[in-house]
Length: 164
Image (cartoon, rainbow, N blue to C red; front, side):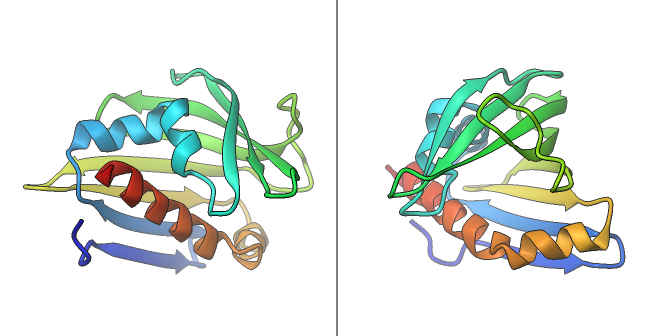
């Protein structure tokens, strides 16, 4: 596994966006599958020692992914992604929200819009993730909750999964 993989994490407060550019030492088809298949997402999405657990997933335009982040003590934090646009092996967008185990959205938190693009390089794949928020306070709240650290740890889990 290469140690010099691209990892850029930037916050654009003026436009209320987080942008992550991340390179993976794997071909596009493997990286795409890891982002779009529940059995693979469950293996890397949560930062250790937490685990992701999918309740249901329909990766199609208009479909949803309902999952929990499960802590070592059994604590569960539920979330859902509502898929908006999908261009197979190129990009997808989804609205993300905290919710309960039935998928009912928690309105105490704002939804974010994720736009993920996938590009094959010579011997790697670059995923560009742009996360947009309606209000600056929503962006700041998610950062205060440790999003950068947790998401970075999850992406490192994906490195290990792709290498196995």
